[in-house]
Image (cartoon, rainbow, N blue to C red; front, side, top):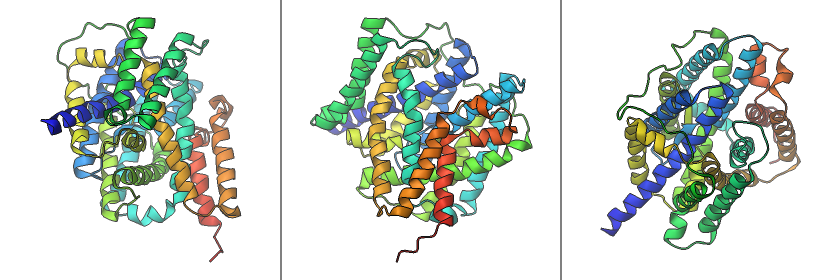
Length: 428
């Protein structure tokens, strides 16, 4: 009975983590493309379905670890850049979204081919601890801005900070962090669940019910190609290919991070990475087909595991199935997506504290000589600096260059890989 109760509670907490990790970014995309509430709700439903299905497939047939497949930070950058690029060229939001479906399909095809023909293992030498650590560090830096905007209540409209929402969000952040660090037993194990629950109730008491009530059917199948059929555009192939290569570093970083959290040491096998790559390709296909942000293995899963101490895979798999099934019931989706954005963002930021630490730990796992420090310095300065540049500054460049040059995470990671390859280490 105790085992069943533990499994139930762990499943609920994994479910809440999957949910919290899926809620915030569709809201951001909706804001970028001026979607109305109904369109954002539809995107939320499709996102829940895609996250549940792809997480289960990876855990069952792919890398076979408890790693959430969720909306990718790298793809958020690509969506943002292509939205601005399209608007500057007079392209409608609908056409841009259809082009993004095509880009995701091409990237997924590359990733699937890498895995099927075992090309991924031939590229693994590129992803040294310096590269994976840098990727994790840059990812947390990039997404921390998104999470902080959500916590401060300025995610959808760049107005003044909403003090009441910000105080509740930071209260949730420190509650999750405090319970996971100083709590004992079940308090530590269910820190994320407790934090979101307390934060949600507090938000309702202070700010009122979040979200907008919807009059929807009790049962609804997630819509296929809701943004319209993919718009064939061969000019996106280069960015799809480069994105696929960078996402391999995301895959390796996630597997390393979660294997370290589960087994106490970073480890992976060639077959595991090849399978993982193939199924990241499959998840891109599912994401494009259901018009959502492309899903990838989220390294933040390791932060969740370290925070809660939950290392078993079964509750994770149950939670993934539960999320996919609940996506067919819009009233339930409407209710659970009512988790206030400041609270969801605060809980996610707490898990990224662990992820940031893991990135720094990977970087420091090798002696930081002058060569490695220079590589890090150049990559971080240019990569992080690019994140602060307004996308409008790239308007005069061809669309391909705009999409590549304005993505700080992509630029920083590529620089680390290139400098490590070109600048040979002569120390023996």
